[in-house]
Amino acid sequence: MAEDDHGHEAVYDASAHAWDVERQGRFPERFLIQRLVAGLPRGAAVLDLGCGSGQPIAAFLAEQGFLVTGVDFSARMLALAAARLPAQRFVRQDMRMLSLGQRFQAVVAWDSFFHLWASEQLVLIPRIAEHLCAGGLFLFTCGPDAARRGAGWPAGLSFTPLCRGKDMPMVWRSRA
Image (cartoon, rainbow, N blue to C red; front, side, top):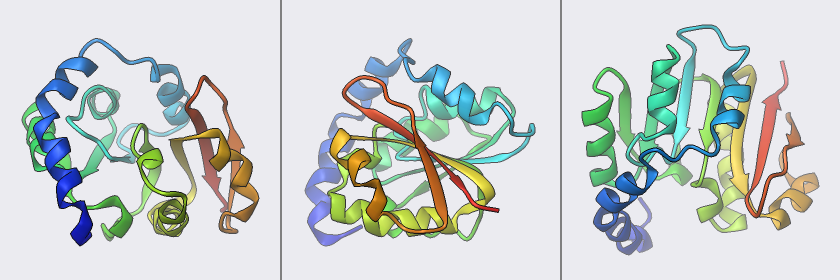
């Protein structure tokens, strides 16, 4: 983690239980997650970047038979996720320093990617690309300004915006 993020980590740790309770029974992004993984084979590796408590996204992915790796920098959020989904892998890491030594068929960064400054997003994107298999998919939420800025993002990935509400979900497919 970056030195200046210890305060942010404390905020996420302090709100872990409340966040977990709030997400129970709420899964408005379900149709996008289903769409993302629809063509993936059972057992495909999927990264939930900024997984929080694992509810509902990592839990849904595990129920669908995918091998989930969740990354978050909140130890309390990860403890909730690991208790809920003990057969899945959870890693405490700052997503800006993403380094897992593994490739995934899909990466989901729902309600996490947009927490980063635009400059941090630009640094993270190539790291995510390094973690995607050829043809892998990257679903994330960003604000509308980031979507308009897409032309300045790294080559090697093509993306298609799927707009919905104030958050702008984006899906990228890595080139084969």
